Length: 204
Image 1 (cartoon, rainbow, N blue to C red):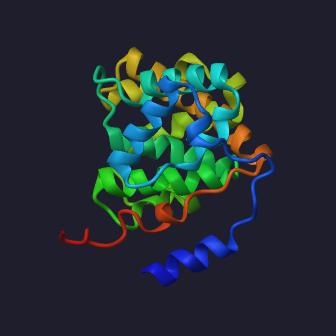
Image 2 (spheres, one colour):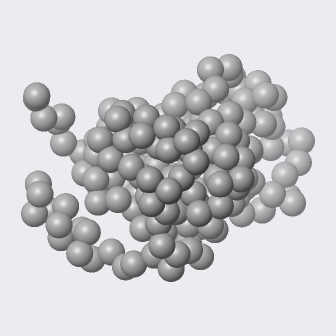
């Protein structure tokens, strides 16, 4: 496994902007990042890539958490990550497809689902509800100006409320920003993401 991680790491290009140094960050940011490291076992590069601008970092992660960690609504954690993976693939964002694809595999407990959703979500092994969700998300992603009242009906038929539909659209829109920031800056996914959720967890 270490050899695979090294191979992936060696193949990654350097980012266009240097990652921030953890020890140089304000205390609130450093504490938040260390908490992520404690939980994940590593620091996802997005936290250090955006930390070069503390005010923007705080705003970005506040909105991220409001969308992705909220308990209200019927969207599951897996479905939220499914939206991110599918729309990030449409936007050709390597970082977000790899990072959120890893979370999608973990939450859905399906080692193949992220690859399926990223390559061709229409043929992925997902539920009719999730298919309707992604149909809407992709329209928001690619043709938001064409959204009409008729687009809400299929989602209502699958039990999504108007607030759930707002969440689908907001997640899509927020990660449209994230995709573009990651791509222009040359942000690279951590090697750890590539293997997460693909193999049984090692017993400690």
